Image (cartoon, rainbow, N blue to C red; front, side, top):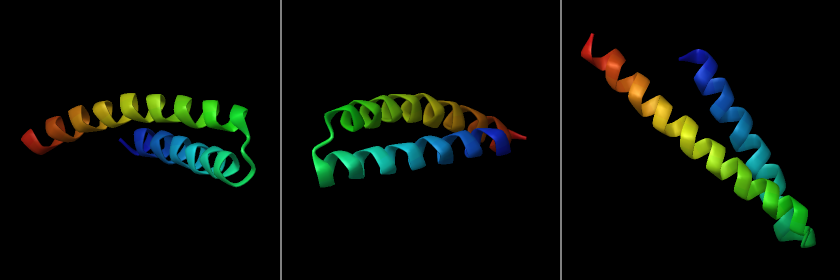
Length: 58
């Protein structure tokens, strides 16, 4: 679970950096990277939900 949380944090940091670059300087490539990070975060969040539910049943 700890490793999963680290991955989520890494993806969020990448998203925050790239989305700010897109917003502040109009960097289109950064926008693409930010969208990619959101897709990866979605997968990780679903995995977190699954792991969290299993842990709460124990």
